[in-house]
Length: 337
Image (cartoon, rainbow, N blue to C red; front, top):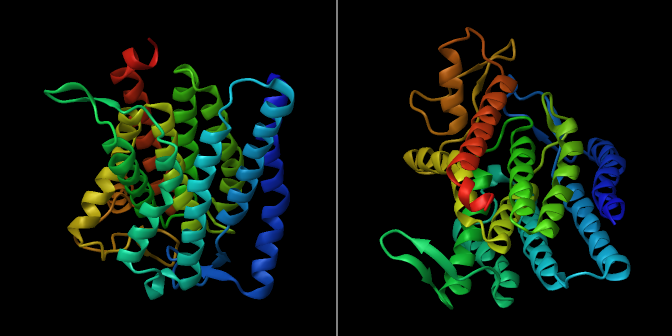
């Protein structure tokens, strides 16, 4: 059975490895390319919206898991939850791809329309009444939110994770690498808290992202697009809701909370990109800090004369890993009970 379940991860990994190079080649052939904004003069271009391949491979991997559970293992019936999760991911993938096609430099979807569509994408989880309605609130203790949980908290959770995950982006390998770190950690949390099926779904995305990261890391041959960032953010929120570990998910989202606060400082108009130099090093784009990438660059400049794109990305990865370890310490009683 374990071997059969491992095949689902292999399917996501192999499909991405086989199709992604073909997508890159096709994009280069027809000119479906985006400028790499952290390269001097933006001369370098890479294939766009590579997230479409990741989502396809992830979906087929998850469906193969459903098939194994249905025809071989015949265990607990969690198909409804899985299809609801896939519904959220696929709806947001369509929204993200639409945003990509319209182009971020031209504004993409309007903010109001985007937020409305993201809220609507939460409907599959709402209609199945997902998650545990009992949550611990400060000064109130454990409180049963009843109908407020699916009608209010689930849409807000999906919207919050989706939009903020999309804020911290724009550097080669950053979005994919963060997805690998966070989803690997949440898959571990899901496994040790008794939701092994949820862990495997998270790892299906990780398997696909590992291949994508190889092509997306510096110097990138392909970019993820909103189709991938929206989908990863939604998967993180969906796992937290279905696995009932919302507090842990919020805690490990600290880098994105910081990013959101810094973005609000710039009224959501300042870009995360740096100011690229001829030698491919980076300089601060603004006098003030308007994003976690700017903060990382500012810190690194205190220790290094020349800071490069991958330096900024690796520092953010280290910060995220530290946050994950802190989560294990702070929430150990709830995780290992």
